[in-house]
Length: 150
Image 1 (tube, rainbow, N blue to C red):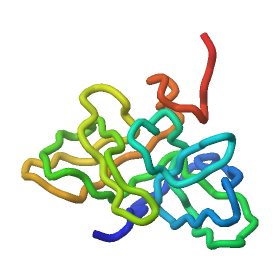
Image 2: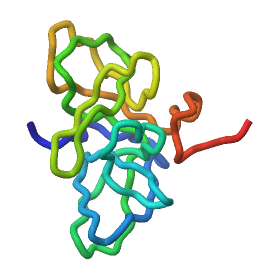
Image 3: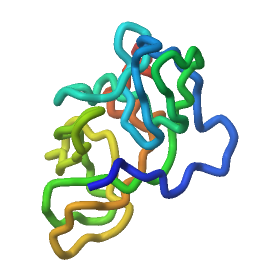
Image 4: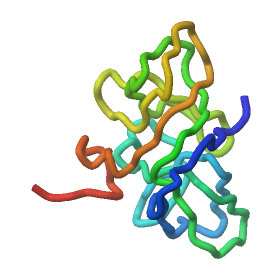
């Protein structure tokens, strides 16, 4: 399966941020899931990193590139998932994948949500469109990027 594909980014301003890359040796591709670790961006690669989810890479970065990463905070993404059916809006969480393997999302079981199904999937599919809305995760207390204190 191919890398995730950005189907649509929000037409509204302010739906992306520039964030520092973990190292100039960190390669990132457009559409990859991003994790904020030690105040720098890297690709998401571990189950449980939903709390460090920082968005979707909007720009490619090669070794030696000194520029910050443009991270989309809101978008529609076409991404792989475990073979299953999903209702519109079903919560999804990270399951597997990193720079060298295919990203996958699975049903979240009402915990660790980081994306939502963008349409109804009545037959089992292995690739689907999902909505990403990082600022909305604040209310779910899963976003490290937008933490707030009570």
